[in-house]
Amino acid sequence: MSIVFPPELMVSVSGFRGKIGHPLTPELVTSLAAGFGAFLRETQGDKPVFLGRDSRTSGPMLARSAASGLQSVGCDVVDLGMIPTPTLLLAVEEKGAAGGIGVTASHNPGEWNALKFASSEGIFLDAEVMGRFQEYLLTRDPPRAGWEEIGSLRSDSGAVDRHMERILTLPFLDVPALKLRSFRVALDCVNGAGGVIMPQLLGALGCQVVGLHMEPHGRFPRDPEPTAANLKGLGEVVREAGADLGLAVDPDVDRLSLVDGDGIPLGEDLTLALASAVVLQREPGVVVTNLSTSQVVEDVARSFGGSVVRAPVGEINVARRMQKEGAVVGGEGNGGVILPRLHYTRDAPLGAALILQHLLDHGGGLRAATDQWPSYTIKKQKVTFPREALAGAYEALTSDLSPPDRDETDGLRMSWPEERVWLHVRPSGTEPVVRLIAEGPSEEEVYALLSRVSEILDGVA
Image (cartoon, rainbow, N blue to C red; front, side, top):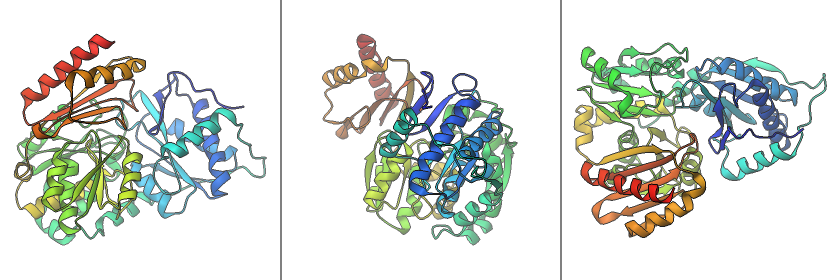
């Protein structure tokens, strides 16, 4: 029997996401996983499917449901346990799995969970494959295995160690020099899956770690999205401990946010820029990022003779464009760094290692490292707006604001290059909201632009 998607279930290239109990139930997860397993078997044969989860309280329950669904269609399941999403994706690629399922709602609050689906490449399903998978779910009844063909289930506890080893052997890192420098780092894992890798990796890089919210029990002590506004507690720890910097990750450890040595949160927008500088200094080339990322990435790329190409928001969209462009580094302005030398996945442990290397290269603190680049104000807002009215909103915004440049590949991005100002309006793929992101040289310009946008949207809704 084919699946009917509950209306409250958020379906996008970011996976299938919802609140626990309604619409996300063990029964729904079992059905989705069974469909994915059968879908994979048609193209990948009988190779195993890897499974991992973050620390959410619903994770063990839903991981068992996913495993049952996979086994029911004859898939052998390798359970990696509680691990970062990038660890799961790296394992899928390295071990030649048919694909993977991550049970995680990333930065969403604790009452949410989700299934994220990965291909055999170790990256999330792109729009074309996700479209075919959704069509399969809606129209096909996955063939169930008989009692003799039910898939096996085994554990693999070595994925985190393999991930760390791959990072520590990257040619962009001077591990002996980092150990000698012995950075003092305050670390906030928000009681997510970061607790199983971040302290260990930082320790291997010679860091003295002062931890905050390290126990991965999934009861998040604050809004788990690592935005600057949510990192005041980490800032206090930085000051109290006399740390060189603070690092914060989201629950599934694909996003990294920064706090300077004075305890002031810098947020996520500088993570990709600083990490890119490390790579471009050693391997000049193309940087790919999304339409919502700060233009400081362009300043960094330009200084090393590189260029920036922009893609629609969404990790898979950036990854696919990186493959097409032969990019040397890329990622998203939400603190996600992608390094092809490792894999085509946002990876916060990787980002942390590159940030430390940047400070070693620069010779100063995090604030001094950021001050060498132009300073912008970037503001991100979430607004409730009817999605069916967005087309009219885009038309009204374009008519009123008359931007010299615009991009409609993902919502509407308008830019005024001479003024170094841009605005991006798009429906979220992970929350039932519309996102407004604006950036410019001054706070006044950004707030004035967002105020005018709000007036226009109010007139359309």
